[in-house]
Length: 202
Image (spheres, rainbow, N blue to C red):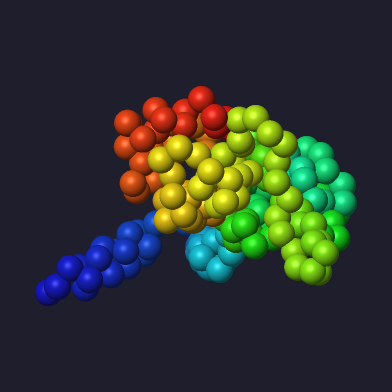
């Protein structure tokens, strides 16, 4: 005889030996049935209850800002606040776009800006033959972030080839932060740099 049969037999023996009247036994059966039914309903309801996750609130981070000084041939020169990934063209547009006669050929408009730098837009002037030339800076030490290739060519030890390299380097890498940074340009060593050091500035 297996365990289930033994259990049934023990329950039946207990039931018949129970010192209750027939009415009391019937009431006990009804109460037991109600308890089992309620327990089953509670278990079923607990399994089907959906758990709602708390709503996810996105955290908005403010984009970092940089400040750029836009000057030269623009309509509204000044210091402007731009997002950290802004490019030179964005700075010029913030300054009211380039002014008539501006020469944008010497500027890398796609370069990403750095905080605190200056964007200088050169201007051109018309000659009697209606050709345009870039306006030259006043006499004195030349600003290496604004100088043209011809102005670099006028420095001691700098020829047209190295002058073109300086302009190309500045266009690709952005403004020079110190005059010593010119030595990063191919063809400018310490000895050559010493020849024109006193004639340049940033």
